[in-house]
Image (cartoon, rainbow, N blue to C red; front, side, top):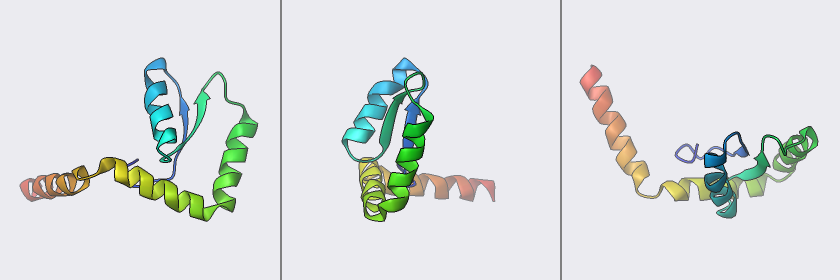
Amino acid sequence: RCYLGLPTIIISVANNQKENCRSLAKEGAAIYLGNQEEVEISSIVNSINFMLRNPEQVRKMVKESMKIMGDSRSGMEEFCKAILQIQT
C-alpha cells in the first residue's frame, strides 16, 4: 500500500501487526484504529468521513506513505520491468 501511495485506514487482526500499524500512523502514512476487538463501526465511519472531508490530509498521507518506500520505489520498478521482459 505504501508503494502505491494508497490512503489507508488500518485495523490490525493479529498482535504481530500492531507495531507496524502504529509506526505507519505515527509517520502520517495511515490512520490506525486499533486491534479488531477494539474497533467500533463508528470509528470506521468517522475515519472515512474524515478522509472525505480533508483531501489535503489524504494527499499528505499519500506523500508520507510513498516516502516510506524511499529509493526502493525505483528499484521495484526495475524489478517489475525485468519480470515483464522474462515473460515476453
